[in-house]
Length: 296
Image (cartoon, rainbow, N blue to C red; front, top):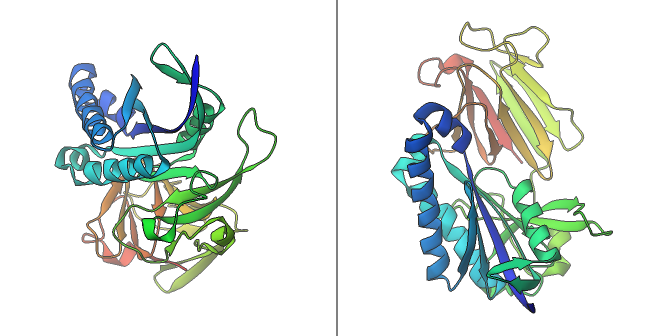
């Protein structure tokens, strides 16, 4: 076996389970393979190497952290621009880490691979998660933008690892450029969320319990409409972000700023900036029942 320092990237397709249920095995598999081939093309264009694909996940290595992050960002942007991915509500969860790996028969092993896999398991839809150590030596000129996600335990390591979220979207609202590890504690992340429904305002912060939205009278914010499930959705603070989770029959529509509505069904979305949330039907059909939100 030989050893060298590499950046390991795992990219996992979010929404594939639903796709197989709705489209059947053959059609869904063709769509997923097309998306993974897109990722493989990005890997090659940034000097990386695809190690293997595992179901709906691709694993790749890169010689530097810069090339790995650049590839991860381009993967997210390519997938978000793909009409077929938007139509099928497919997205990527990406985790990466830079460290020493062992080569054996075309595969790679070691603690760095396990850490990268752990980063991927923590990432949500449209998110890139890595360790602060991986981006420690990147200069401000790299243009890397991150948010602090706090600390987590990785199996096999005694110390907790500092995590960061690599920002790849064009919207830079509430985002601070990463300028070295000494500034990590200063990286801004959302610490409060205000929700407004028909004049009623509710504010959440990092100490708040999950907030339930739905038709049931026990919900924290009650939305009375026949198309709203009793326990329709929830919002919770998770590692520096407010996360909306849909658990409904008819889904949830979310507008982030002036973007087109995002439709969630049994899925999650990071709330950022400001916008509105509509349960069961789009805001255009029932504007009075839309919840306004603002992260700050």
